[in-house]
Amino acid sequence: MEKLHISCDGGDYDILIAPEHPEEALALPGGKLLVCDSNVAKLHRAWAEKLTAPADTFVFPAGEKAKNADTLLAICRRAAQLKLDRGATFVALGGGVTGDLTGFAAAIYLRGVEVMQIPTTLLAMVDSSVGGKTAIDIPEGKNLVGAFHQPCRVVIEPRLLATLPKRELGNGLAEVVKTAVLGDAQLFELLESNARRLFDAPLPEDLYAEIILRCCRVKSAVVAADAHEHGCRAFLNYGHTFGHALELLSGFRLAHGEGVAIGMVLAAKLAVRLGVCEAELAARQLELLRALGLPTLVPAGIDPRACLDAMRGDKKARNGRVVLILPEAIGKVRAVGDVPPEIIADFLREVFA
Ligand code: GLY
Image: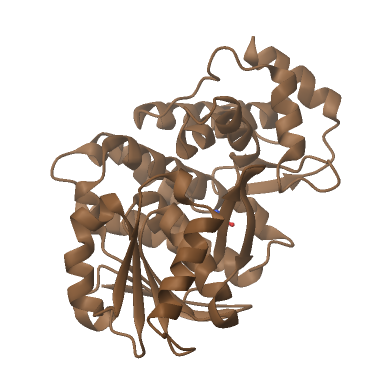
């Protein structure tokens, strides 16, 4: 088992990876409400119920569509019907949608109860379950309403990845590459040397445990330094400004990690153009993303002007100014907020051609 401790504004908690005694790792005092989607319920509900002994399990329909105010309130209402009090813990069993939704419900139920995260997707294990970002979607955009609410514990079982569809694994691997580029050069090399093994059946669990540990280390350090994203937490958005825009403009045909993969390719190309990094970095990153089977080209039919508009409308933009996270070297990025929009527009016109 690996244990990381994270101490940040709003939280002080352990991340337990591959715990030897899951029954102890998952035991918490007080009433519990387990939350999962209909897919995860089929696969892991019985296991989680046995180990967490919840008062009840709230199951919602799988998919991003359910990440809305109705589901959020339904979770809170179920907790109220069960008469869960301030000593209660909501247990999020699932991927990013479940973690965000349950975390937000925990942030507002009785003005705040604990949430334990048990991620079941690679993306959630390496990124979204750690750091306390919670949210729902509204018709105007994804994740536009939410709160920072740190979990009381994160328990990661890499063996749960065995049931994950290949595309979902790829999605998570895009966030792993992101983490490597922004803060862990050795992780990047580990991925380069093992890219072929990452989709083996059975999955190489020890390798995944090492990858997850390294990602959680980087993420914990960033969140400990800047829990509320006033500074370096923005580094975690590497590839996301382009990526979110492409996800949106593809009508969400691109999955999140796929948008991020293309977004990282674009960010690195722009960084080379601006003299922020060497061309070799962009080439190495491109090769790794390809080896992982991730898309690296902007899908046909996306208008570069619409992309710039979407980037300016991103919730991370400040006063309409696009802040780009650009790589300097493998393991090091920087935030650049002063790239003139005309330069970005010219760049997009060129790469979208
Ligand atoms: N996923 C980016 C963050 O947690 O800040």
